[in-house]
Amino acid sequence: MTDDLLTFLDGIPTAMHTAHELERRFAKYGFLRLGENDRWQLEPGGRYLVGRGASLIAWVAGTAPTAEGGARIAVAHVDCPGLRLKHRAARQDGGYVVAPVEVYGSPIIATWVDRDLTIAGTLIVGNRTQAPFASDYSIVPFSLVGARGVIPNLAVHLNRKMNESLSYNEHEHLNVLLDLASGEADNHTDERDHAHGNGSNHSPAAILTTLAAASAGVEPEQVLDAEFFLCDGGGVTIAGLSGQLFTAAAIDNRAGCLTVQEALCSSEPAVTSVAVFYDHEEIGSRSATGADSTLLQDWLQRVVALEYGDSDREAYYRAVSRSTVVSNDAAHAVHPSYRDRHDRAFAPVLGGGPVLKIDANQRYAGAPQLTARMRVLSQQCGVPLQELVSRADMRPGSTVGPLTAAQTGMATVDVGMPILAMHSIRETAARSDVQQLQQLLSAYYSS
Ligand code: ZN
Image 1 (cartoon, rainbow, N blue to C red):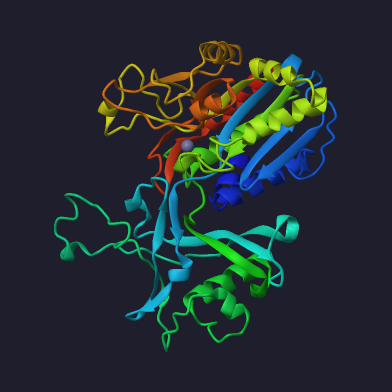
Image 2: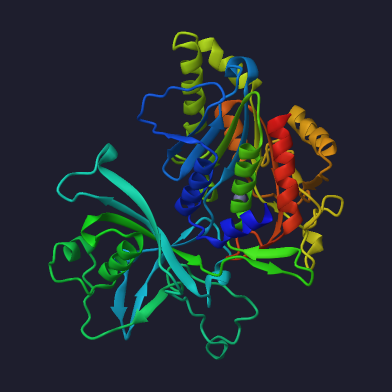
């Protein structure tokens, strides 16, 4: 499990890369990919997977229909906060090639500065002679090898107050230095002109597209559109004197994704068991693929319709009522230098086991029967369960748990792995917590 996690965290942390890696792992366990636009045929005990954008649902069909057995669901999110490159605005400017960024979610921006940044993202690949509808295009992830950009800090000599309050204006101060300017400035930014040989193939945007196409193994002429993110390219590092810690990008929530995937693949469930991986958690989940969408409802309605026929509408409501959701997202471990940010009675530590996240205001989902079930399961499988309740004068961040509960009406609970420096470009966690979280989720699927 730990080696598996290390390989997983060594990859590039964009949502689409994470989704592709999960899909590859599910395929190894015999999960069959279905399209939302296909006609489905499901068999009891069958293993299936369906995607929408970078979101995925994988499930093992139970031997009992869902209206009788319900669905046992665990959810995690594939996206992470970061910086998206405005690649069409890349330009030669005063001796440099630079590009502005958009901030995605709420990263700790200072950690993206003075960092070797690699560039990764997705290409929309298709035929230029026709408008891309339905299956006329594909989405291909790419990543450029090595450090391709840096956002340099201002020298301390030019801002003597830097260490008193470090702040950045996202529009003014986060331009990425991509290269030195070469020769005549050519800032024409439409990569399609480049593909059509219109003489702008030296524009920074065209160069970015050409590099991305080469790394994805497609021709630049096939690229209809592209999305570029700046990522930490440092992979995963085992840390601490005894090697019990690790640091990596997007442990929140790639560790959550991997523990859900491993738990589902390693269990032999009797009832329908489901792993859901949502995109867009970090920006509020409101999209066609986020937790505030119809994704999970659509899936359950479809499964129930296949089991009972379209006319038995009541079967859907019985299935909802018997289903449960465990939302698995990172939890704040107590910080050694900022212990006062936690209620001392609820201060999870790294290496102390998975965390049950509790909030009276439902920033974390907490269906009482499911909270009780997690406590019982942790005792049964011998995994310690830490608890997190925020200080009364602080509001915790939220998760996909409350949104999934609100969208589906299913009993939902929030758990997660304790980490430090949530939303930093590199986060810190303990190796044993990964293993114990996976054990707890396996017990949930098998219970
Ligand atoms: Zn998260």
